Amino acid sequence: MEQEEFIKKSSILEVKKQYPQAQDFLENIGLQNLPEDLSLDEALLTVPEDDLAQFDLTRKSLPEQLIEFINTIRKIKGTCTQVKNLTIIGGENKNRQKEKITLTVKAGEIISIVGPTGSGKSCLLADVECLAQGDTPSKRCIMINGGRLSDEERFNLGNRLVAQLSQNMNFVMDVSVADFLSMHAKIRLVKDEQAVVKKCFDTANKLAGEKFSDDTKVTQLSGGQSRALMIADAAYISSSPIVLIDEIENAGVDRQEAIKCLARSEKIVILSTHDPLLALGADKRIVIKNGGMDKIITTTDTEKKCRNTIKHLDDTLLDIRNRLRRGELIENIDELRNNI
Amino acid sequence: MKLVTVSGPPSSGKTAVILQLIERLKQDESTAGAVKFDCLTTFDKAAYVSSDVPVQIGLSGKFCPDHFYISNIEKCVQWGIKNKFDYLFTESAGLCNRCSPHVQGVLAICVIDSLAGVHTPRKIGPMLKYADIIVITKGDIVSQAEREVFMFNVLQANAKAHVIFINGITGQGAFMLRKHVQTAREVVSLQDYRLRFTTPAAVCSYCTGETHIGDNYQMGMMKTMEFR
Image (cartoon, rainbow over all chains, first blue to last red; front, side, top):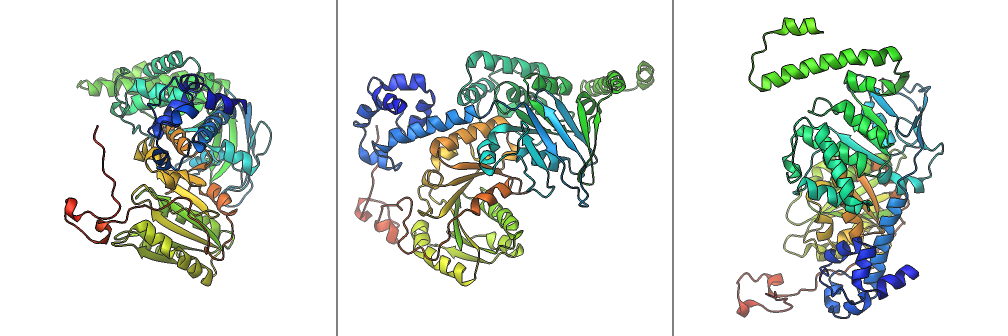
């Protein structure tokens, strides 16, 4: 009631200050130019009722819908934060054999999913995405903080808990990187918007092979730059505590560093991959066979040591690729072999 | 029979979403039919037929598509009941972006596509604003951040709706929609039901086939543009 009173009776300027999303709401119905020194109730008296009727609004219903919108956005923000862990309880594989696996993933942990193409990696990601409760073909069940979810909770949480990144994703908006990030930060009601946007931009630039400026249009970024920006955005601006990644491979991004940057933001990171560096960079990996979770391997210390050699191999290949790009001849392969 | 009205801009994925949904409804032996409304022509019949979904096509031709829809919807319901469907879906493109086929007391779905640009949710008006469920398609090919901006704009136009992301090709997300659709109310007739939003007010000489431009030819309800 207090809030209602405030929105109807305070000056529009004050309302916009308290609830920045009010500006957007008014723009949406062509009322961005209401006199800001008046209260919403007073200002609406200057708008012809016919104009409001175009949007099926009245002087009475408009403030009510604004309040509803503000509260919905706040509710979204409120439900996002606390996911301490996620548990995947096995269902069955394509041959209807039971998956004898239960895996709990803590915030800040990285889990990779490996297996042949078409074995069911994306299916497992999809189960996490919809917070399956034994009602998908795999019969798996996803628990959040140790508890099952009611349908109601799933609907309310659905789009807010899980962020997704994949190789197929592109930017489609016609805006600059800077505008894009601040737009996203604004709707996320991020505190200290400028600092967050800067951090996000700097990280993206660090992850990307080639640097870009913040007045570049997001649609003009290269594949690697786009992926870097998406990852930095997921780490610092998107509030979803779970990040699912479907195959980000050789896209000109520091993949390992990208994944780490997500984990440092206390996200739960689950990634399906064929890339040995990424797979071994995870804390554990799920091996998929016949559409089912076959086993869980915890990355061993020896494996971690091997990562350095693999990294070296990877860098060597990357170097050859770069030399190709620069128009050099690739003839001294023996020397490279000796290096390894 | 449960009736569901599905609206959305052309090529947003309405048919794909309905077919994915019906496939999941069939899992518990439910039967479903569809009625597709369009203006001039439609190619969706083949899609329904190849999925074994009984379908009727209504082409409005020279009539206002929304008036055409509203004057035929009751017959559609009776067709569905006669065929003993558990579910009947009506599919109509929001043809002028001003109207909405949604009826009070009948579950309303609006399908929009995330490639359509972030301002689309603001432009398409009543069919989005009066929907109970908003399905966003093609979310798999745009960035997470844009999906979030898109959803924000959707909620701005309709804060009450449930928003569901569905991949029309793989069907990912469709089973969540199934849960909503299962709770739709039963109808036996739409007699005395009401539209959620009015259809256009204009009745003018152009509605009845006038093609000349000029003051002399304009009769009936007109709205003139203001130049500032």
